Image 1 (cartoon, rainbow, N blue to C red):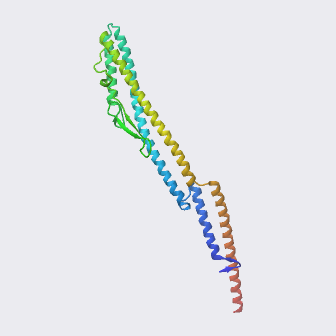
Image 2: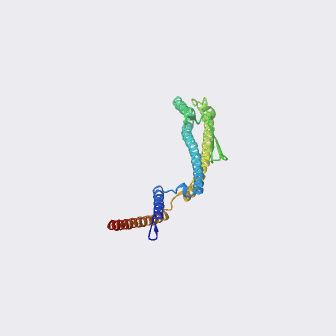
Length: 270
């Protein structure tokens, strides 16, 4: 039905189109994301980028677990290092002789027991770290093209050369001192190796974080809403919608008036 130069059905279609655009704009402003249907190609690319980001995050999670294991091991070795230094001080005192040799040796045996306990009991996530059994390969990138092999040496009394150590006489204390110095050096080397591995893991973490940031930025450009543009389009569509509603109401009023006029004329003729 036409009234003047306007087609009411065409106007209804335009109104439905404007309403659809308004709903789309509202959803975009609410979610901050562009819908998949708006650009399927870009959405597919963004999905691929998101998958890469998740893979990098999983790799970093594995790296962080390895870093935590190394930190635990290093903390235990730091304690062993302190015990070794105290043991060295006792050996130096015992070399001077005196009536306190037995007491000094008792203290030394207590320190040796602490060192042995660290070797047997230090663990992370159920894995013993300082008994010589810990070996692990940590992936540094999602494609597993780069990895870091981690193995930790034993800090047992036998491995440190301190098994059966005795400082109950000046002579034994002098012999023990050389062994203690060698054990201190082994402990320092073990901690240095851990430090190097921690640095390598941190470097890989930083590289992956940069990649995650770059991929996130690229994905954001493909999927995130341009708020200024979307708000402007939303306001324009809202204005069109209101204008179309007003025009439709006007047409309906005109149609009603004409209908009433025709009915009145027909009634008058009868």
